[in-house]
Amino acid sequence: VVQSAVVGRAADGNEEVVAFVQLLKGSNVTPSELMAFASKQLTSYKRPSQIIVLDALPATSTGKILKHKLAESLRGT
Image (cartoon, rainbow, N blue to C red; front, top):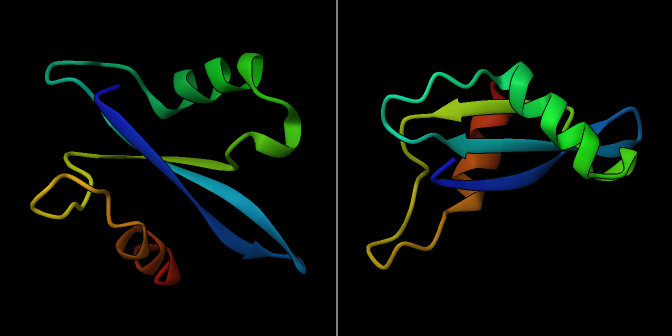
């Protein structure tokens, strides 16, 4: 994983965690494998309900990840 970010998504009157990750070039890690790793490292309420792999995370010119862009991308799903 090169970088990652998480955002919240409304779900059943609560909020769930959705993770976005950028993988190293040539990496063949699947979202399922990342989820399995996260389940061993994080308590249940911190685990993402979904992991989305992107070629690049949206960022400013200084490299700050634009989480609002990630959240907007979830509204269409």
